[in-house]
Length: 122
Image 1 (cartoon, rainbow, N blue to C red):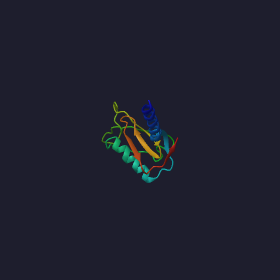
Image 2: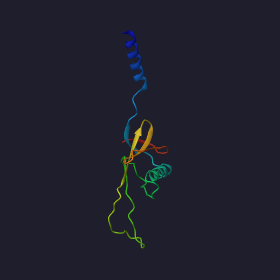
Image 3: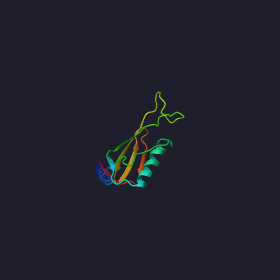
Image 4: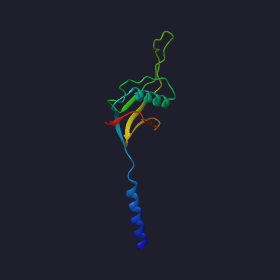
């Protein structure tokens, strides 16, 4: 009986030592810089397979959600073509995980660490 108690005690101590995993907390960018905006454009562009995109300077500064819509088709004169748009917008959310700012692509679940962005819980 003693070995069982000893084993239970060791396992409970090991469980306490490992700690709980860090949780994602919705976050916003606190001090956007040219560098952090460029990183955001790079990361989102990579997530959407290199499609050209434009992101507002204040993206993710007031809300933790970023929605990227597909560009509408245009004719030779530059006017938008009418027709059915079958593409869905891409959704991202910014979270703080421990001390890290992480952008999560909702559709794929891929996580991108933002090294140059300063963020805080929303």
